[in-house]
Length: 294
Image 1 (cartoon, rainbow, N blue to C red):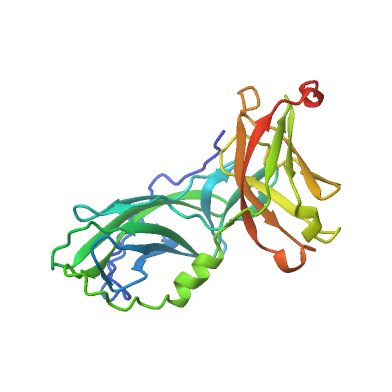
Image 2 (cartoon, helix red, strand yellow; image 1 turned 90 degrees about the vertical axis):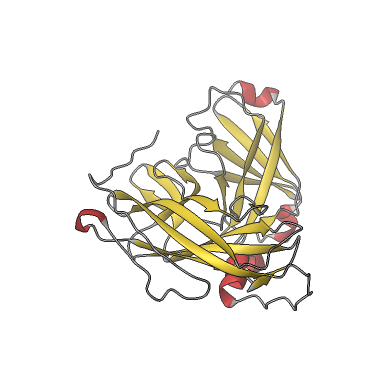
């Protein structure tokens, strides 16, 4: 279920942004509505060679007190949507979503971002390039929320030089923005996982993680897909030797078969050097007679 309150007129935001700066950018809002999120498009290098892969970033600068949403917004909201228009032969991968914050409002729990968030994507250049600069344009839609939620949208673009002769230029050093953005991404989990599925709850077991965490460590599992778990329900953590078991209440999709669970395990207070880090989890379900009765 999505409980979204929106204004009668959604702000329309137009930003014309070039690589590295935005002089002369035009910003508009419909019917005098204030703009709550400004966007900018950037690339991590100035030029590209045939067959090269590089990063682009959509930067959201969010007004204080407002937030936007993760790929799974939780109990309300809508994830930011990006549509890129690329030169012939270029292709772009899916968004690399940073670890989100958890917002609680009454019975609702949502996942998203405050302040500044950087959405990274890999771009693959074709094997043949022209000598004309490559312009990459993005159209973005997002939901800006405080006490109410207002749909907003905007456009941005970034231009990189094309080096058709594969001059093997020295790669541009990563900027602080791209370095920081990479640090906010969840890491692949170094621990194996398993999942026992019941009618009302699931047990996610992370094998071997207890060896690396203090006994007081806190953690939370954030599902990548809406409806698989109850976001607002308490997550119960228990140690079993070197393993940790998280009991999670099932969500609105509890009547549907659940073959696995994907998400981010965020290590919280008391986790020592791992505190604040997120790890990508892919757990496949196994039969569990003990859980079927629950």
